[in-house]
Image (cartoon, rainbow, N blue to C red):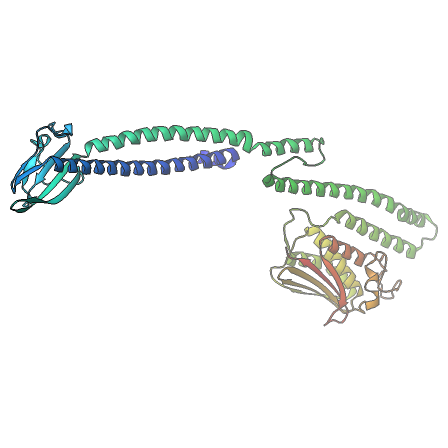
Length: 444
């Protein structure tokens, strides 16, 4: 039984065929019940109508001579009233309930205490006018229910045979129609997917029904996303290889020289770091995947803080967090790590003693804020520093040992945020009085 249920759950055809069979079967059972009840009611009404007509006919034949003397012709129009134990019985009762006349068919049949479960009956009490006054009489017809029950049983048998034949035929026809016509679009999708996998098609572009079109659209989105990711990674590798040639050559020449220039080597290393970060970021700039699950921000922020802990300690900066519970972001965890890493690295290098990471979850949006207590970014420079290669400060090598970057940090952050449907704002930190990088993402 479990194996059959497991097989049923694993097959769409069997599921639909099972639902179809159960639906048709339930419909057939209800139809049979309704038709049988209607037939029974109509047959009972017909019997009662016939008994009423026979009572009226009996009244027309009866001759009342006295209060206890009723005469009926020997030849009756209904032949069953003349056959012994025929199942149809007639009698005329007096005012006291005594039998004044009974049909030949009732001879030898005890009608005392008869039950409605055994007989159909129709009784008509009348006041018969005589010369000396009125006489109360009751004309009564009884019919055995056995013949009626046999008729209903025959109808039930014929009905069930017909309905079962029709039900099995409908189930067979519907199952075949479901397989050959109803599920044909899914078979077409499977063939198109095979063609897509073998490179014969660039995407799914068949004339699919509306219900299947949503599925094929999602598959096409996923295929395009993966193609774009692969192309971007290939391009990033090619660009990285090309971009590294010049600084590596400069480093080699410097190392092979009689008097190596340490400052120049430091600049080339910084340049290499900036190029690698930029190309890695370019490889990831695809926005959210079509089926990207929401990632909790808290654990990623904690891991990023741990990764940058040595840099913060070297710069004499304390990392603080103010994280709202339950904040999630629909973004790849690697992209979130890249986003936080660039933002925190930038904040640590410009802070004096403190950097704070804050998250807030509001209806419809998720907010990520990174504040520092550094000099901040003047309002006139906030749009400019988001451009690649631009810096908020113009300082070169600093006396405290902080290396000059390549002007890529904020532009990378801005690109990552916008590629994932978010917005980036540069503001003044209200408490730390330095720069605030505020990123707002949709919660959907």
